[in-house]
Amino acid sequence: MTIFARFCAHSGLRALSPIVMILLIGLSAPAPASAQAGGGTSSVDALEVLEGAATRFAGLEGFCAHFDQHVQNDLLRQSFRSHGELCQARPDRFAMHFAEPEGDRVIADGRDIWIYFPSTDPGQAFRSRASAVEGRFDLHREFLSDPGERYDPSFEGTETVGGQESYRLALEPLQPSPYLRARIWVGVGDSLIHRLEITEDDGLVRTLDLSEMRLNPRIPEGTFEFDLPEGVQVIVR
Image (spheres, rainbow, N blue to C red):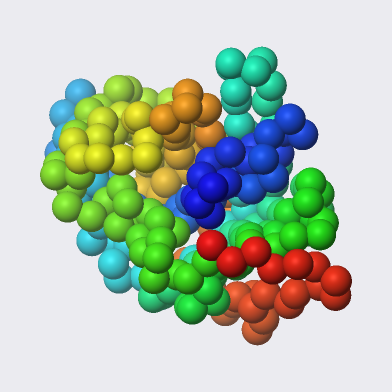
């Protein structure tokens, strides 16, 4: 099983494999001019939102945010919730530290990607070369690069997420993708991505809510370093 197959399989459900699919969440740009000028949502252009998001994200050095994740598996009638802190620093650093389940983490240190979930598999840590999974931890590349070519965006309306009125956009893949479809919620007022929903190829639905976002923050030293616990076996993928 590949490292990303394990990502997709793990949902924190004890009946499933212990590795979760992690997505690096990016940030979007100022609200599209068509929406600002009209003062409403009827003139929102989904492609314009994605193009603006790509421009804004490209100018950032990094960000941190609190995440709440919900995974729903209708086939098994199971669901799982988790939360914690994620940070990204360009060009290739990423960290996802779980507060619940406590101690679970995913680290991209620029060379390797480490996945360690002691909540379900305390004796093993998984390592993969970052070059082998290029782009999969970068929302800008996965969802925002080449707007209109990788995904076909459509505007579905507005919805309040975390107290923020947000544009809901559906993204249908136009090229081979590990996802059947995706949705993003972009704040009307602050132009940040507040929610991401992904339907994976096995029908599993993963929702990630972001809050307390900090742009270009001072990230504590050691955030992107993985310290292998004593006695833990490393599985190389």
